[in-house]
Each structure stands twice: as C-alpha cells, then as structure tokens.
Length: 376
Image (cartoon, rainbow, N blue to C red):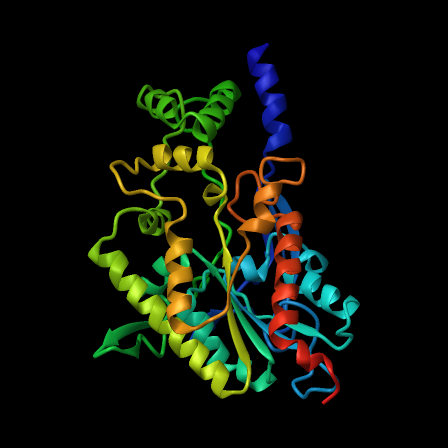
C-alpha cells in the first residue's frame, strides 16, 4: 500500500524534463547568446515555457533600432532571472513592466530583454557595449542575482575580466569555439533513477528528506535508503558569498564593483541612466530556508548571513552613486503564501515572481527615465 501510494504521488509530482529547440549559440566575444530568430520549448517538473527570440537575439517581440516615438526605452540586462525562461513571454518581467509603463502614462515605452541564462556581470556589460548602445536606451537596468559574483570568476567558455592596477582588463577573447557540444544548457537534466533500488517509496522518502530534513537525508543515503545529495560546484561557489570573507570572495567583489563602475560610466556616456535592481534568492527572504540551505550544503561555522550579498551590493552602489532598487519588499509578503513567487524545486521565479519584478522595474523606469515619455 505504501509503494502504491508513493507511485501515485511521484507520478503527479514528476514530469520528465524536455527541451525542444535551440537555447544558445556560440559568440566569440560573449561566449553564447540566444540564437537570433529561433524559438525553444522547455518542460521541467515545475514549469513549461516557450522562448521566442527576435532577430536581434533579444527575448520578446521585434524592436526597431531607430526610435519611432516617445519612450522610455529600457535595456534590461542580467541572467536567467531577467530572461525569465521559466514563464511564457506575456508573463515575463519585461512584458509586465512594458505594459505597466504604457498603461501609466508612457504609451511608447519599450522594455528590451537582454537577459541571458548563465551570464554574469561581465557578459551583461559586454553585451551592452557590443549591442545595447545601438538601441539608444534611456535607461539600463542591471538585474543582479547573487551568483553573478561567482559567474564573473568563471573562465570556461566565456570572457572574463581581471583587475590590473585598479583597471579592468578583458581576458579570454575570442572565446574558443566549442567542438560541436551545446554552449549552455540553462536547465540541467534530471538525475538518473536511483540505482540501488526500484522502490518508489524510497524515492519519495529521498525527495522528502532532501527538501526538509538534510541531516536525516544524509543518514539515509549512507545506508543506501536515499539518493545521495549531489555536490554542485557552481552552487557551492555562489553560496560562499554569504559566508565569512575569503581572498576569493574579496577578489570577486572587487571585480564586481569595478564592473558596475565601468558599466555605469559607459551607459552615462551614451546619455542614458543606469540602475541596479537586486533579485534575492528565496532563502534570503525565509530564515527557515536559509537554515535548511546551510544544513543541506554543510555551511558550518560563524559568519554566515542571508543578507550579506544584498548589503554589500547596496554599499557598492552607494559608493558609486548608482540608483539601487531592492526586490525584497515586493517579494517578501508573497513568500510561503498562496501567491508564492518562487518555483518549488527550482530557484527561479514563477509567473507571480516575474510579475512582481516587472512592477518594480516599471516603477524604477518611471522614476529615472520618466521625462522620456514626453515627445522628443
């Protein structure tokens, strides 16, 4: 009876992942970009979505490079949170922000989605220099997520910056062309079936304890009764930024702040405004989940702080004189309610989270580029 109930529960909770279409294409400067004019469909346990990319490689509808009416025109930079690949286009932060601006006195507003899964601040900055300035935006918003810090330090299949004598120096370009393998798969394939048993009951127990009782899960895994929790290097490198400072994290912060400074300088030189919009991980909004995250990844010792990344980014933006907007006040009230903004087994936002981010993005755009709503 237990086995039968577990099979029913798993059949309802688990859908096989599938990606149809191309998600990325090689680029010698950026490493990868969304393939221009292509589309792809993604299906994962928590979501199904279709990504359509316009002729300029931006997610969303076609946009004329030449301005044809009043603005503001917003260039949204960032990673998968900006790209919004977990929802269909009408539910992305880009679409929500554009609709909100147009309904609120800016009928010609355009929000361009330059977010790309896997990008750090380095690639977001380079994409603006390579492509974004040609669209003459009134405002560039960099949607920052905590793992941008670790992404900036990666050196595989992408460009990177180093600091030399206080200045950023670009390295790793041209990016070597891949030998036929995909440049990036933003949604990982599901793990293989448990090799030690064929029992749905053990699989169900493994999933339940992994989600809510990490210590018990490790004990069960040691006895072959649960799937061992996989170590994931990129996640562990990202989580290190919530702990005590190390030489590695301090180097990453120095590069991140220099990237913000140069990004803002170039945007302002082009006659546009620049702002930073902070996207928190769910554990930054829920103390119980932060405790579970620490237990799951065995982040032991003193000095761990869920708010560390946000505060350091806010302070860096303050030193540079950059507008800083925080999505936490918009997301916090919805966490652990019927309007939960995060996916259950994926760190990204669902349609509710994207909507809330889009509403804040529209408010930022109106406050910083509102004059562009008037005819030129």
